[in-house]
Length: 317
Ligand SMILES: Nc1nc2c(c(=O)[nH]1)N[C@H]1C(S)=C(S)[C@@H](COP(=O)(O)O)O[C@H]1N2
Ligand SMILES: [Mo]
Image (cartoon, rainbow, N blue to C red; front, side, top):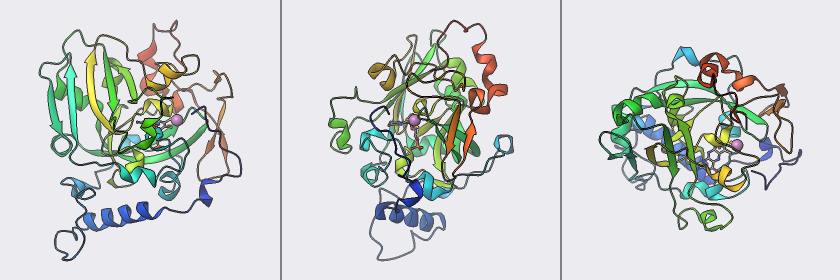
């Protein structure tokens, strides 16, 4: 994050849709319409056609709608942070190299029964819904996305943590052949993030398997990513392969790299600036607006309670 500051004239609107992205959208649309199975002569794209694609769209949960306009998909899908595929915002095309099947999620550590579960079996067994969420990057830009997925709490119910489990530690794939930027020795790969078990059980904590009513595009962190909308975006780890229950506070990739700037809690607070820039306001992607940033990114009523008694912690960065 700290290595590339976007210039004012690098408008995301000016970026063309990469061909690979266009193709994956098109095949997702065809799959959604149930056309793929019956059409002869189409190239096999096993990578993009999955057992659970047809479950989209998930039913909208009206409890999580918001007043802001949804960020147009073409803008969101072409302005991403996914450092495994490069250090700019234009990684959508490179991220098409991400292989999303087979994909196995490992659940281990302090749980009743550690297990490996295939992503489609997981998706089929979870209570699926769509939610509109705000997303606030620590770099002071924001967007609004219709995420599809299931509450992280449902995964807690599946995992059955033991009483000693205090934290969840999430890990992204580590495959420099597939994701060449993982050859960079600057970053302590794989990408890691963590939350407390209380945060994981909060209503807002959401595991994402789709966006815009479709299976998750690769650059959004397919096939499974986190959405923690009251925290800065770097906490919302992409392309998760492992969730470990532990008694030790996990150290995230950014915290390991730059502990003076990025910490464990990373809750959004307009009054606590980043050491190198203000967090008071944010640029809304897809518009020319700058709007005031809200405490807990506007989600205080859901999460403020979690931090009572923790005032001595560095809760805001
Ligand atoms: N594995 C992984 N997860 C990640 C990142 C990343 O580089 N790698 N970037 C984070 C940051 S800084 C942000 S703002 C969001 C961006 O999500 P988006 O590209 O869907 O907007 O993903 C987060 N999760
Ligand atoms: Mo971010």
